[in-house]
Length: 160
Length: 160
Image (cartoon, rainbow over all chains, first blue to last red; front, side):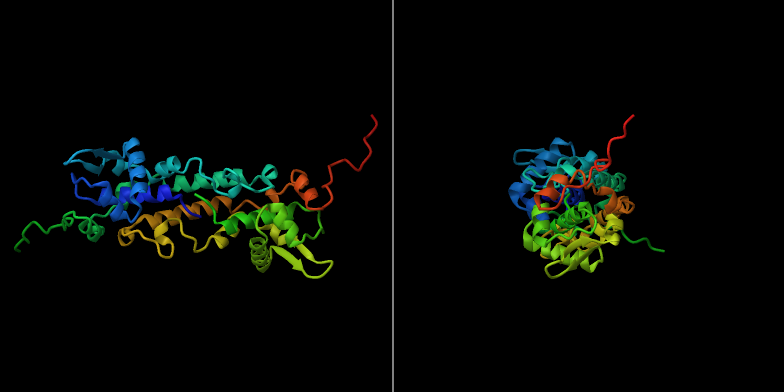
């Protein structure tokens, strides 16, 4: 059982932009490098996620892509329900599917119910909960961002 | 979101053999034709399902493949949990997966939980419930089996 490549990349893009220091804008090229996916796939994904209000992107020298508050608060279940809509769970549902049992099949209804149970399980999971700037640090640094702050690292240790 | 091709074919094989008239044995070639899948994939699937006790197969002139009582009673959830074990939901889980965020990712745990919810939803669905000999009739006839009996068709209509 596998998510579509589109959903897979979309989740990675949200995890990466969500882990970036606040206010930091990333180029699409840096995101593609950071998530290890082809540039033109990432471009399409960024466009779709921007259309859903989960990313903000601006053009120009100071432009770039960043996650929005709505992106951080996005429900993973709701997002996947949106992105996976219309994808086929079994070949017979796909365009040109070749199963001759198609017309006699009650399987699709029960698979659709099970898919909904899958989404429901993720409805209460927010992108924010999956994001860890500190753990994503090496990737952020590799694409030219500053290392994420360590908690307490800027304050002097209290003298007892 | 899509099941693996192996699970997809396995479900079709169970639906077809489950719809065949009781005691009827099918050749693997007829099953392949009936489910619209390549012969060598179906051979592998029949082997796996026989190993799980869901199909019975015998060699020789009078040999063939038929579903077992355990096959008809099989839970779709339990079967998919078995067949999908080890399959990757996202690329990073796959061998050679390329996501650089791998180490910082909390996504896999929540996806694994959601997948379990998917299986759980199907735990109470039995192969028997998905099978309809009457509706699969045209496919059964096309692979050389007799048409399934219509309820009441052998008895004379009662005279009022």
